[in-house]
Image 1: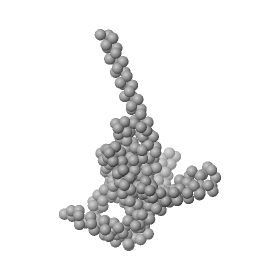
Image 2: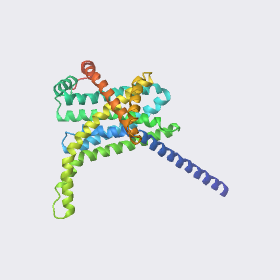
Image 3: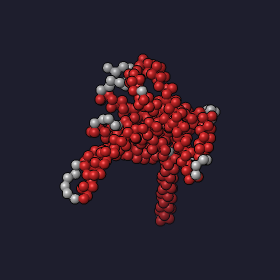
Image 4: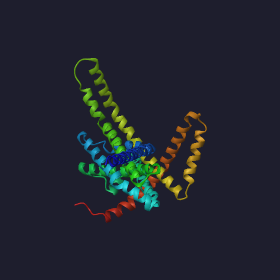
Length: 328
């Protein structure tokens, strides 16, 4: 009896050790996969604030919360099962789907550039695709839905990169690591976005601090500085976010073309990057090569988006208006 109990306890300890090792493996795999997708995560954080800017202060956090909820749903309910199933039964589908998403990012980014330089023509384009003349509530809904769609593409890229960089593991282990990456990235990105969009309100509150003392005076000065700084920072972030969209979208298209045998663009960009990196000191070569690839991918994405703008206006939007039910 005692021997059986000891054996049972030994089995429990052994199972516990295996479970602990499995959890360690999941955490390690998630950390590795998350690190590999860090570039797209930063792009996600840069892109999202532009969907919130322009609304009343009391609507900012609710909008961020809605987008974060949609992002979590994207990753855990749609993308994670799809990535796991497709990686097993139809891995060939992943590349064309990512390329479709890349085209959407290129279009969105190019549309913002088009709007900045050709405002009247951009307004006509918005009328054609049904964006102009919306009420504040409709505009918020449109912005939130647009942010969630953009997040879906960026999240798909994150999950694809993460899945590709998880070492050999079982189906359950990969799924658990992807879930951990998805949840962790969502909390990090939208926590940062919430801090960014509310920083000016924090500055106003600090600038209003009253009373004597060096510390309170320093808080007031910091608050005033924050209020002055944030509008410029948000404008810069909007530019970075637009650049990130065409950069990521262009990069997806270039990589997809290489998968299908059209390797010219990727090879040309690589050769230019290596050549430019060769003329600078060794310390800066990695940075110069990365910046060259990013800039070239962005230009490629911008060109692709520019081609898509008239396609969407004259083909996709009219077809969508005929097919989709009209709002009452």
